[in-house]
Amino acid sequence: MYETTYHRPSSVDEAAALFAKGKEAKYLAGGHTLLPVMKQRLASPSDVIDLGKIKDLVGIEMSGDALTIKAATTYFDILQSADAKKAIPAIVHLTSVLGDPQVRYRGTIGGSIANNDPAADFPAAVLALGATVKTNKRSIAGDGFFKGLFSTALEDGEIITAISFPIPARAGYSKMRHPASRFALTGVFVVKTKAGDVRVAATGASQNGVMRVPAVEAALKANWSAGALDNVTISTDGLLADIHGSSAYRANLIKVMAQRAVTAAG
Amino acid sequence: MSTIKLTVNGKAVSAEVEDRTLLVHLLRETLNLTGTHVGCDTSQCGTCVVHIDGKAVKSCTVLAGQAAGSNVTTIEGISKGDELHPMQAAFRDNHGLQCGYCTPGMIMSSIDIVNRYGGKLDEETVRHELEGNICRCTGYHNIVKSVLDAAGRMKVAQAAE
Image 1 (cartoon, rainbow over the protein chains, first blue to last red):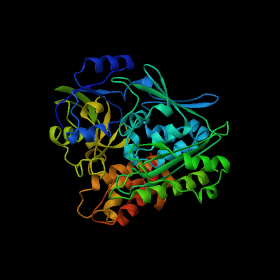
Image 2 (cartoon, rainbow over the protein chains, first blue to last red; image 1 turned 60 degrees about the vertical axis):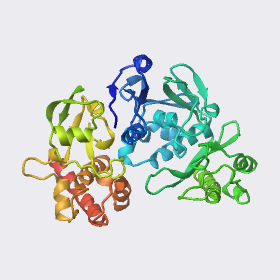
Image 3 (cartoon, chains in turn green, yellow; image 1 turned 180 degrees about the horizontal axis):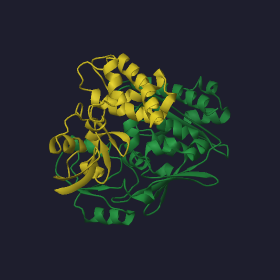
Image 4 (cartoon, rainbow over the protein chains, first blue to last red; image 1 turned 45 degrees about the vertical axis):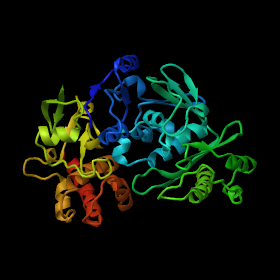
């Protein structure tokens, strides 16, 4: 790891001011992506600004129609949350199959979506549920937040403060885990909104990161059941192909994971 | 350089380290607590697991600065003098180790598992919860046996306190 300067601000404003002063600053939340990347010398930030100790960024709140998870809330805290379990159990399930227990103590929801790893789990939840990403500057609709591999709508120095998920009528997540990395070989999040819309997002499958799956959405809108997807064919265009699986394998996984997610959603 | 103040195994510690120092290196190189190991260095293998404020974390993926002000417990801090922690005793009695490299991490993770599940532990849960710790010798069988044995001992120890 190259040399860096570590900062631990106690407020979002202080963090943003430190970022502006740094030559090439980076925010750190749980650190379980940034630190490995720094160790590999693929990142060499002049300043590391720790958001993990900012009290305003931690907590889970439920209002009538939305579950709001503040950005530096850890996966462990999400798993413990009675509100999350009640409002959107699919999010709690997603969290339980993410990383390992030690990683779940440190990793944060804000860190996950800010990084937008193409095989990360939370981008699928944000996109499928049509969540709103709140930052220190504005609110960004989930549909416009993810911009391809490791890219988001966030501007330089902008800090995610919370993610607000509309509570759906039904939701489910199913994931084929890579057995070593525990990232999604493909994971699919299915949602039936209270207005009756169907939204489906797949992670780990596309060369462009998380994506909606219109073919699955149309079939589920007509008939919300796993069987409705039996004859759906997923195009291999733009899907990932690597040593772990071909694009045809991932296309099939999208279908199978969607079926399992629908079954889990009930 | 920064001065890091934290509590390690119940003792207040102050150390002058570079900001890029990882917690595991502060423990091993500055404080000479070499029971905590570095295996993969990529937060996969779990040999570096210590407790920060009671939570089992991978100290190869935590900056020393992030741990400032915290209570850190390492494998050196769990026995009471010559009396092994029930988890350590269970690992010894059940042959839960061979080469011993993964053992400190296994034990620190396993204590955290028992703390979270208490008496509700079964074999499947232990195997699932240990997924962040890799052992290349034992095939896990005796490790799982040790954790289940220790869960019973820790319950008895807590009841006695």
